[in-house]
Length: 420
Image (cartoon, rainbow, N blue to C red; front, top):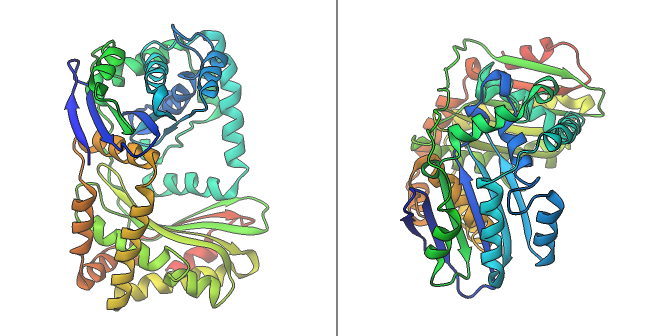
């Protein structure tokens, strides 16, 4: 399905030719994110993502870049995570060269004008405030701090207002010099591709300078002997919570059993948590579970927005379901349904060129290789009832529990008692 080649400057090129389509997603992924930051520049990865849209040597203003993209009916955006940042443009296939030109210019010759940096500080700060005002977003940021502590994985991807206001142009240039090197990037094209796609990539991305790669700060495992509970007071009518534990890293095959376990517990309207918490008791509108692997650790979490007056009952039901799946084997039909659900949703996602570009780009940057969908599905198919039970037994232990709550509470004590 995909091909990988290396350009002369060391930049890896991944192509997925889908000739039946009329569009192409062009994506550049970089091994950069908040895990590569220090405390005094926390938030710079996300800030830099914004700045790449503010003008380059060839296209000097944000308005010019936006006008070009809008003028061909294309869409563009970017995203910053803990371990990867990516930039993309989706356009009609006939505009592929312009998309490549704009994207390469944004990344390799950004102006980083000081007046634009100062203006964008206000935009970033408003984004941070918007996120703080949304309890369903805020609870995630607070949970990461609770589970991972005062180290890069536990820091807010967006940084804080004081740090944002202190950033200078030299901070951005030093950060780019440490990470935005061809060997730390991958260029991905997905869609209807021309035969000379490799030549096009060479033409526009050969000018990327070869720089030294900055290593991320290894995660320091925190010793935990009892549940951790965090409470963020916010006068809300609904309680948002995340109940989680440390999970598995990207190289750990147990993550496949954890993926299936999360589907059984909290993916879809027939999952155990949805049935028990929402359908049978009416305690929540939203509830889900998921497992997120990082390079050297992971997180298995349950997210819920619970009825304020019933939050104690809701938490007890969630805890009971996690412990039940560790004490009893899941049913054969549950295992089969979870596997088919994952397979089916992957098939639907594969119809999106953006999904495919993000999948290949982020996975290659993080792992320096790409597992095919067939390889991933084979791993999932190999998971047994016993594998799911073993992972549940490993994860759902009282001393590993982490609970973050956003709601009108000032003390964590009553929640700690439920967990203990």
